[in-house]
Amino acid sequence: MFEDMEGMMAKLKEAQVKIEETKARLNTVLYQFNFIMSYN
Image 1 (cartoon, helix red, strand yellow):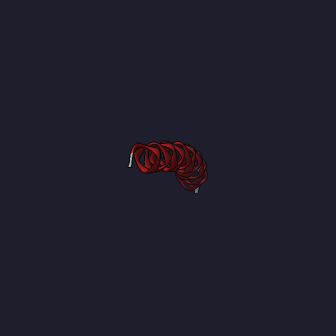
Image 2: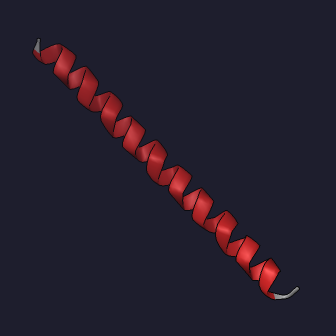
């Protein structure tokens, strides 16, 4: 039972890291897009 919980927690942490990376990437893209649009 506890091994399953540990595995689930590890997967959850991995998912959170991937979400944070994706958010950072999106913020960069949006920032660049706004920067480009502000010059047009």
